[in-house]
Amino acid sequence: MKTKQNLAAQGLAAFGLAALPLAVQAQATAVDTVALNPMVVTATLAPRTADETLSSVTVLDEATLRRQDPTSVTDLLRGQPGVDVSTNGSFGKNSSVFIRGTSNDQNVLLVDGIRLRSATTGGAAWQFLDPRMFERAEIVRGPRGSLYGADAVGGVVQLFTHEAQEGGPHPSVSVGGGSFNTQRYSAGLSGESGGTRYSFAGSHFSTDGTPVRRDGEDMGYDNTTGLVRLAHTFDGGTEIGVMALRARGTTEYDESGLLATTDYVQQVAGLYGELPITTNWRSRLTLSEARDESVNSFYDSILDTETRKVRWENTIWTGPHEVIVGAEYLNDSVAGSITGSMPWDGPYEVEERNNRAAFSQVLLDFSPLAVQASLRYDDNEAYGNEVTGSLALGYELDDAHTLRASYGTAFKAPTFNDLYWPGFGNPDLEAETSKTVELGVRGQYRQWFWDTALYQTDIDNLISAQRGGMTMNIPTTRIRGVEFSAGAEVGDWTMAAALTYNDPEDRATGNRLRRRASEGARFDVDRVLGEWSLGGSWVVQGHRYEDAANTDRLSGFGLVNLRAGWQFAPLWSARLTVENALDREYTTARFFDGDDYLNAGRAAFVSVHFGQ
Image 1 (cartoon, rainbow, N blue to C red):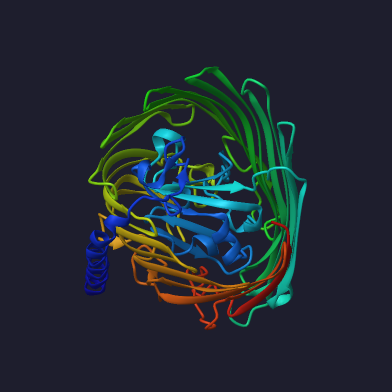
Image 2 (cartoon, helix red, strand yellow; image 1 turned 135 degrees about the horizontal axis):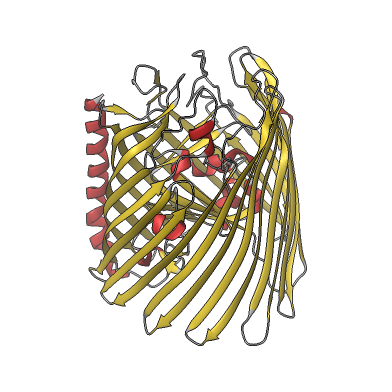
């Protein structure tokens, strides 16, 4: 195993070194445009170009989402730099997103700035989000506890819903279907008038699905999502707005060889007001709520979690420098019951907890030197006080190259399930704490870019659910890794590449953490041919282990996805996608009885779209 890891690391290093001569040659054509240097807001709470964030970031823009037209958010994220995905089958089945070797509940998912997660599991239900409701995704790798609080250990993913278009109204409609009796519909309306911006959208997805176990039944899934966004800007710059997204549906799954169902709701809603106090000071107050609800037929269970938050954020500009200070109040609540095969009424000894926080950040520009520092204090009634912070330094070596170094801390508290779930919960668990060191460099040119980063994360008291046993703390965990990404827009060609190697190691045993792949790669290529476009993606993930002892090995795999588009009339287009075109059988998780969770084989989907 060590030999394969060394070869992978050497390959990544060689790939990165090979890019350096090209970077030198390209320096003369640097920085006339920023098409490949997009604005990012998640990394620093403020708009910064990718090279100015002093972070490892990946932006998937609207054009990328349209070209790839994925059936799930996890398909979009799989293989991106530092990102690994594990699923219990396809189409609405349990999914986990690992960023830099950290677990699903050590990462934060935001939808338009509102955190969406389950307070019981601690992680996000990625599988229940329809990617057609979003026009942009930002992936920030590395700790962000000092900005977002608990659980931002490995990174933050933010999904942005569709912005209102100027003028209007602008309608849009999409109809499609394909393999496994899949049907996809969506419609939207957006525009702007008299300072008021509006965006409404709805979608429906249904499929008979595929078996998740050999010789098993098809496991269906359906999702209906609605989105509302309204905002108004007054004379003088004051702005108010509201946003709400609600997804609901049913997913079927295999429980000990029997067909079971989960009815789910995923919801985020927010109301904000933003006021310019002075020309250099802007204040924003946000009230938000997120819900994760489920009804399970097998266990006859109802589990509802709700997170309510009040956040006050102030941004002050002084010359080229920026200061952000704010406060936050958060309330988590849990309600539900389990009867049936596990008699249990009132599932949690504690059903509510509050968190108060204060945070600050400074963004200093002493060109060519940039300094970013942040500090946050959290006071949680369940697990006490935590202080997190970060410091990042950036230096512009020349017009095209930026060197960065950073240090950050984060923490993760035990979830309601970690502490109280019968048979698995452990009330003696301690909170996790982490520290991360990163060194990176980015080359930014007119038509292409490259970025590479080395990092190490040390986690004390990692909370881990052991297969067949209760949740426990792993005393020390070390994650080391290297990432390389590149992208180019040359003529009619759009290309992106990502290579990842990380080693998430339990220091007590020397074993890799369960269900994490150490090696990953992704290559995306698209070309426009007049009214037509053709493209494809190759996603590779290395082997992983189902168990903490590293005796139950899951083989690595490579997936080829193909796509084509046709703009056959003004505002009209058609798309064809073929997922897993080579019909590979692959698995990233196993049942407790040792059977593989099977993912879908080859699948083709066709759709017709009207609108901008």
